[in-house]
Structures are given as C-alpha cells and as structure tokens.
Length: 552
Image 1 (tube, rainbow, N blue to C red):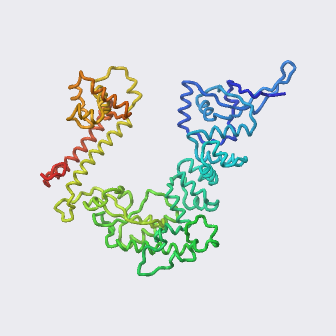
Image 2 (image 1 turned 90 degrees about the horizontal axis):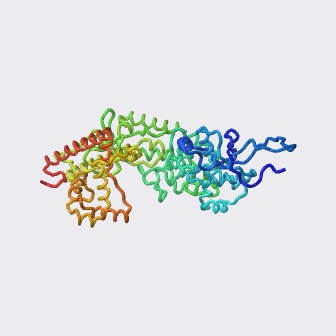
C-alpha cells in the first residue's frame, strides 16, 4: 500500500503539525530580518509555500480499509519562512508536500541553503563538508554550485575550527581571513589561541590573528628585531648579539627534516627564551634613542617631546597584561609618564610633519606593541587643546599661512559633511513622499537644482557662464527667476541626465524646511564653522595675508 505519490501536492497544513529538520545545515536566522518577514506575512500572507515531507502517519479505518493519514511533517525547504509564520500567528501554512527519502531531503536542503546570497560562511563550510562526507568530490561540488575548487577547499577548512571559533567567525568577531588562518592549525594549537587570546566579547582582525600566530610560533620574518627581507638583525647595540637567527640551529629552516612538523614554510624560532631576550634588548635599544625626550611624570604632552602611550582600547590576555604592567612599572619608576589613548585619543595619519612642526601633535611610542612582541615605530597623535605656534616663533614653518588657509577650507568641508550626514540619516523619505500637498517654492528650486546638475559642462558654461559648477541655493533661485519661461536649459540637463545617470539632491535645504531639529543642528554647525573660519581669517589678516593665504 502506497502512503503517498511522487506528485508534489499543495496543502494548507496546521502549523503545529510541522517541525524543522535536524538535518538542515542552516542554524542561524537573523532576528531582525525574521520580524520584518513576519510583519510582511501579516499584511500580505505567505507568497511562497514551504516544502515538507511526511514523517508520521496515523492509520484509520474507512469503508473497511486501513488508510494512512499524514499527521506529522518535516521541513525540507523554507524553515525561515516557517519561523516567520509562527511569529505572525498563522494557524496554517501553505506547503508543497513531497515524498522524499532522507538522502533526497538532505540534498534538497543543501542545495537551497548553498544558493542563498546571505549564507553564513561556517554553514556553507559545513554543507560542503557534509557533501564531501557523502562521497562527492570537491571538483564536483564546485562545479555544481558555480564555485572554484579553491573556494570549496578553503570553506571546508573552516569546518575544522573548534566550536567557539566557528561561532566567532559566524558572528563576525573573527574575520573570515583570520578564520582561515586558525583553521590551518591543529586542535591543540587552536585551543592555545582560545586559552591565551580569545575573549567572546572582543573582535579580532586578520592582523590580530597574524600577530598571535607570529608570537605563538615565533615567526622570524616578522620578529621585531629582524630585517624580514634578509633575516639579518637590523640593529646591533654595542656590537653584541646573542645569536644570529640567520645561521642559528633553532631556526626551523636550517633543519628542515628535524622541524618538519612546523606549521609554515617560513622560518620560526624554537628557543622562546632567546627570542624574548633578543626582543627585550631590541626594545631597550629602541627606547634609548628617545629617552632624553620622554615626557616626565606629571608633565603635559608638549611639542618636541615623545609620549609613551598605553592602548587601553584593546583586549589583552593575562600574559600580555602582565608584560604591559612590568613595562609600565619600569618606565614610571624611571620618572617617565605613561599616557593612555583616552588622554591622547586622536591619531594623525596625514600631514604629520606639518602638525609636528606647528606644535599641535606629538610623537608617541606604544608600549603595548612591545608587550605583544610587535614591530615598533613612533606614530603621531594630536595634543588636546594645543595651539599652533605663532609666526614670531623661530620654529614657525614658512608655510604657516598656507596651512592656516588649508585648515579653514577643511573646517568648511567638515561642516558640509556633518550636515549632509545628518540630513541623510534623519530624512524620512517615506513620510515626505507620501505628502499630497502642492510643491512649495523651495521644493521647485531643489527640483530645478537637480535638473541643473544634469547639465553637461559645455552646456552649463554656455547657458550660465557666471555660475559655478555647483550653484548655491540662492544662485539657483536667481537662475529660476531669469529663466522662468525658458525650459530649453532644463531639456539640455535632462538629455545629459539620460546619458550619464548621475544624481545629486540638496538635502540640506530640504531638511531646513522639513525639520525644526534639523534646522537647529544645521544652524549650529554652520555657526561653529563660521566662527572658527573667522578666527583663522583674522589671524591671517594680522599676519598680512588674505583668507587664501595671498600676501596683502
């Protein structure tokens, strides 16, 4: 007696009779997305039925015959939609019922999940692994799902991560590249990372993982005391060295057969005592170059000095914390001040020489890099509330006026960015578009400005030679007043728009009319920028320059 046939059947099935499949490789479902889908289902119903198979029957007698009635179903495809339907309070769900074996059902689940655009990399790795365990070759899996062989191979490696690390990769707390690096390690070395470094409340970049690997395996190419290109010590304090890594017996590359079990082809050190000692000697030598310029205890950061700094924004394991404490105690007992990144929060990545020259920044040495056996060099941070040196200062750079003018322009650009960011974030597009009232004059001006922006450069200069490439709101109003009855320029702009597809809107002006709060924010931002620019311009005039740093 056949319990079902092979023809898919569309049925409305009570939600209580349906259960998720334990074979489903998908384990994570975003709560926010589920709530959004549930709300859509409440309003429109479920537009795409889920696929199920029958797992339990109830035998009943009808007309002297035993009939098997399906009473339990297992989800084959559509568990996310099923969960959203439960959230939406649906009593029944439209289902396509198929007669599938365990292998057929699993294959359908794998196929559906691997075709998702938002598939979790760990779930994808586990799905590929499951297919491999069922006898499929990697090249066949890659061809079937439109991936490269290397992609499938690398994904399968992720499935070899220990559970805490798999969860961290799925949650984005460990980068995918960092996950690949850890997946190359055996179980004991992965456990060492968990014990020594991992904290579930922290996030780890690829460089964090690489740094730990370098410390754990003492990679000589990236040792702080080495020249990574030649593997020769790039320093030689007092002409004394412990042992040269290039020829040392503890360099794994010098005895390939003896250290064949090491994890990479790069040279690694197996003598931790010697490695740490050389790192300490190197760091002491590095600090001694700047010791006469260190900021002393209880003194503020000042131009020309060097600040020792400790980064308190990063998580450290117990061993690193102890090393940081030891370094801090040693330096503070010598009379030097240790700053925190909260005291000097702003790093300078561009124009470092300029900011050092005008006294607004200070060189810094991060002692936490030494505690983590990292490469070390000075970096630049801004001094809070520091004023640039005045031109009567003998150390004042000759290009100081030009730098002031540049800073004035930067202030204005920063204000523009703040206003645009606020407008984009707070503009309620749906509410605005839903209005039915006639357009107000300012809206017509913005529309015309959008059209004006479509003009090609040649058309714009020909029609409006006195207007810049991006007119102000006031200039746009003047253009409209002059061309109220002439739409030819608009047609030029429309033609250019069709060809280029560019788009830009005047959000700032719109926000002024739509929101009192936005208007207040914009006014305050502009006033602060104008006050700062005025102060700079006043100083330039005192020096005999205009706002563009031209000599008066």
